Length: 195
Image 1 (cartoon, one colour):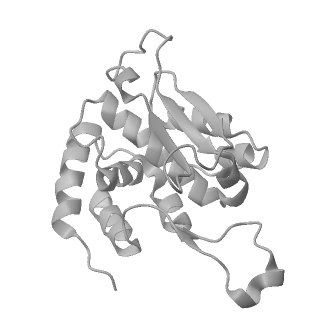
Image 2 (image 1 turned 135 degrees about the vertical axis):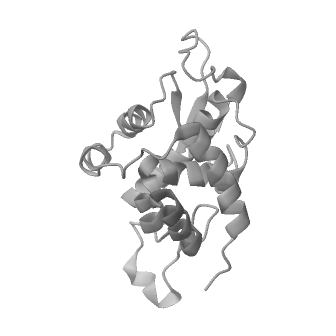
C-alpha cells in the first residue's frame, strides 16, 4: 500500500472546498460517453465546461506532431494569461488553448480521457479564481475529484492502449499511469469530500 500524503491532501482540499464548496456529485456518464463514441472531443470539452461552470471560451486544438507540447503529454493548456477572472466571460477574442494529442484520443480509454480533460479544465478554473494552486498538479487533480470526476480518475488512472496488438502479448501489455495521486489518495480524498 502506498503512503498517503494526508497533510497535503487535507491542506489542498481545505482551500478547494472553501473556494468551490462540497456540493458536487459524480458526473453522469451517458452524455460524455455518447460524445466519446461519436469521437466528438470538442463536444466533450464543451459538456465538461458546462458541468464545471466554466463560462469563458476555450480554444480546443488537436496535435498531430509528437514533438509538440510536453513530452508524453496527452492534454495540456497554455495561454493562462488569457483566462478571465471567474464570472467574467472575457472579450471572446483572447482565450486559453487546450491541446489534445490525436494519438491519445485514439488510444486512451474513456475514463482516462475524461480525467485528462477534467484535469486540464481544472487548471483553467483555478487560474480563473486566481488561486495560488493553479499550477499545483496534486491540487488540480483534487479539484477534478471535488467537481465530480473522481470515479473517472480511479477507473482510468492506470490504462493500456485500446488498440494494443495482442499478437505481441508475449512481450507484455504496455500500461500507462496518469495523474498525480495514488489510488489510495484518490479514495482518501473522496472520503473527505463525502464526510
